[in-house]
Length: 189
Image (cartoon, rainbow, N blue to C red; front, side, top):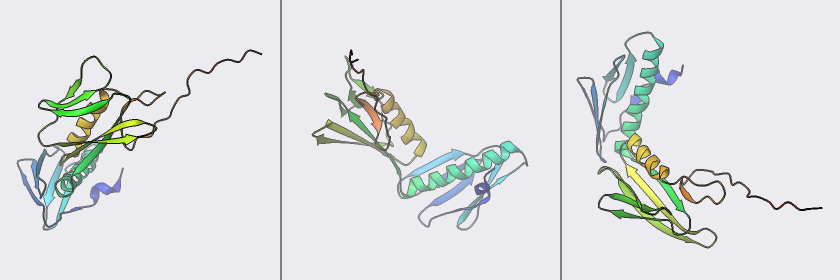
């Protein structure tokens, strides 16, 4: 088991934290978050630190302790700095645009796919012209909740996964794809 679960989390000056009825609330300059605390752990707020303590000496309690510590750390990072994911749309004629219902994606299907974007997540679009790859559309999703940003990014990526031959589709900006070689002509001797 990781020993990180015992380390307390330091609270920045601009963050306010309260624990009431097994719910932790974190507020900061970018927004507010709240999360239910697990049944096998206890969260203790001291002056400028938060300690997560296991109520039992079991493996599940230790796992919940480490998970809760990590979630609290992500909540604090979210309300101070925020989280962002960048996706790239690559392919001839592939593009994206914002609409009233959310993000409309034109990805070679007969009708555009629409992904609903929650109100607390900001979506920015940028088109970059490239000589060798054509037009690349960059979709940047920003938000306070790390899990929500990741979930929406996964929904956008799921609309058209990149093919292994030409890499046409939607992928993460930091994703490394291996390109497959197409069929080769067999030379008759």
